[in-house]
Length: 310
Image (cartoon, rainbow, N blue to C red):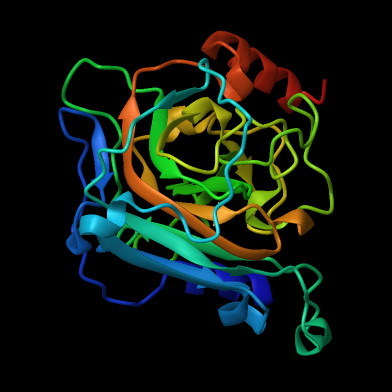
């Protein structure tokens, strides 16, 4: 089965990797990419590795004087970033991780012969060395963290945040295929989709949220702090379909069971072509805006209605 093997290869089953295991510090930071060492445990995966697709991806550390330079081929935009969803963070970045490559949704003939019906995978992700370990986003302090904050410099392309959490179906060992999958919009194109509408059938893959209403309109130049509420993540099946009636609630309810965390290009046709996204840090915050900018309680109410098919 093609997709089962993808799930296993994506998270490197049976591979022994050296990890700098992150912990949530008192300042809320999980990852700070100021040095090459901070990329430990991070890797990329594309449809080219899966079935010979056309996507490529790589990660590299950029530091020193290069950290202050603009993204390659970036174009300025006059669209302002709404202050209720994005806080401008300035340019005090000493180093960062650059996630770049070429995104393609074309399916090669050899993959069609194998029954592949969709393509478009380009992601970078950190994962635990094996499924006996978890990344716990709770802290020893009394601070209640409800959101992730990504310090980014985007290129105008749509991106999603992806995560996996331990499920009750998982056995001890390195098999991640039964882990719960979660997706939330990170940098969607301004103006795409409806207000929290259902994902379209054609989007599929790891990012079927590619056409949801954007949480903000981002600028292509300059560093930005992007708040992604844990309640905005939607559970997906191993085949990339949204799960209705989520038994484990939201990612907020599973934040002590994180197996992997990463970013992918949203698999929509208008994302095709070269991409480049700079990530300076990832941290947690107590800021409590809910899914699609709704207050936390209202976001949970909306999710309950959706799980009931209303």
